[in-house]
Amino acid sequence: MKRTKNRAGTSSGRPSAADLAAARGKSIADVIAPNLKILFCGINPGLYSGATGHHFARPGNRFWPALHQAGFTKRQLHPSEQRELLEAGYGVVNLVNRATATADELAPAEFVAGRRRLAAKLRRHRPKAIAFLGVGAYCHAFGLRSAAIGLQPGTFAGAKVWVLPNPSGLNANYQLPELVKLFRAVRK
Image 1 (cartoon, rainbow, N blue to C red):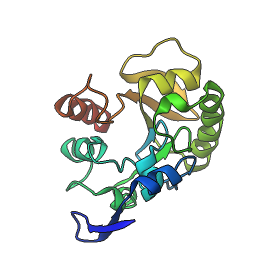
Image 2 (image 1 turned 180 degrees about the horizontal axis):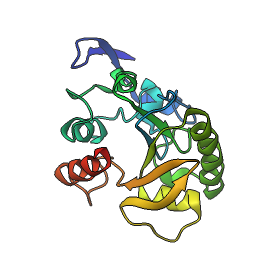
Image 3 (image 1 turned 90 degrees about the horizontal axis):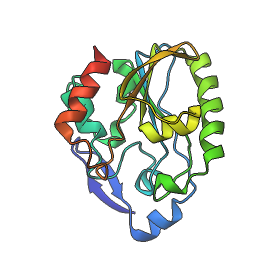
Image 4 (image 1 turned 135 degrees about the vertical axis):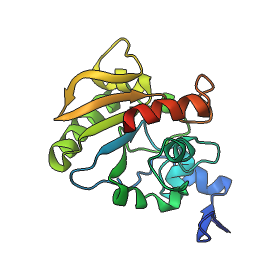
């Protein structure tokens, strides 16, 4: 992996095409601790995240900018600084922890199995809320035909449930200002 300096001045790798190909099927570590305010739940790691080991690592993903601009962090974190979220009371996991080029490569059964694993994590760590980042993945996992963006009725394993758009740069339906507004609603 080519070594470059990130915004924090620490060394981080920029994956090559071979690194991305080798990342297929890899998992990445959860960023989780007991009693978080909000646990963010991505669909699954992309190949860039699988190669780097960092959540939402692909350049152009709007998770880190939206998080900062919505007031969750004092500055925009680089994906390699993901563990700093814990200090602020937030964490990140994936519904399916298998790196793919697109979420379309995931089987419906993987979403259901991911929901069961996620429920166990929530019972163990007891976050106050969980924010799913992707309506389609949320619907697959819970067997729903549709869901609205925002706070959902009821709880999941004791946590309030929010559904937010996928922050991928490929999701053209939601631009950064709209994502920031929705993230702010969760923070409040």
